[in-house]
Image 1 (cartoon, rainbow, N blue to C red):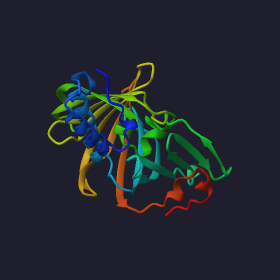
Image 2 (image 1 turned 180 degrees about the vertical axis):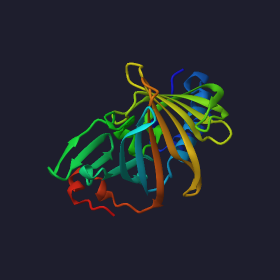
Image 3 (image 1 turned 120 degrees about the vertical axis):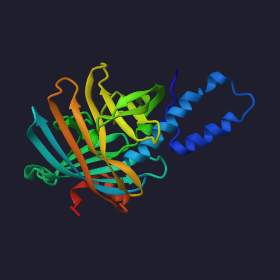
Image 4 (image 1 turned 90 degrees about the horizontal axis):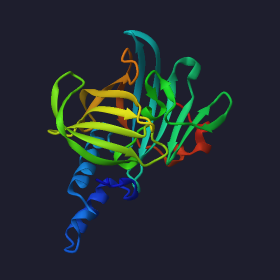
Length: 272
């Protein structure tokens, strides 16, 4: 089954509307578009809308790494995310607050480029989204992104899955394959709750097919008009004794100017 590449269509809702009009054409061949492909895009878009407020917003993210139940590292960042009307994807600016030695360092996602800025050297360099930030969490995990615009997706089936609260839930199983250089993972297997489209669990893979990490979404709370996960438990794909907890708090809508999301503007950013 060949998955739809949503990145070519821009905004997912626009893609769905366009597909609906195509389906109405009498000369469309069944092989041109599989119903399951369309369904997979729709499921993933709904899960994205639950993971991320579909507006410009700011959120504080605390990451704590553990090994054998003992804390080994931690960091606190603030992520500023501006949703682009043209594409439906986010521009993200991440300010590192703690530890003190890293205070003021910045990560910027703009299009297909991730930048790192160090105020000490006043230099910015391109960075890999796959590089680890702390524990099992990568740079790409703290920038805001809609999966449906970075990954091609297919519906692989329906099955029961154990969620972050160790409860069995009926779920769709989606297979995602990267369509962008900015993604931190080559492929993702994502389980989405069949009853409410909440993301439940994800497996994240390198290009070699090696399992990098497993994540469970939990801590469901009302946030900016939707019940969203405020905690992600990330287990290492090689060593299950290594676990990173990512907690999101203090979500607030904010009108973020486009000028913030330029590499040349990074030296002028000031913590709000």
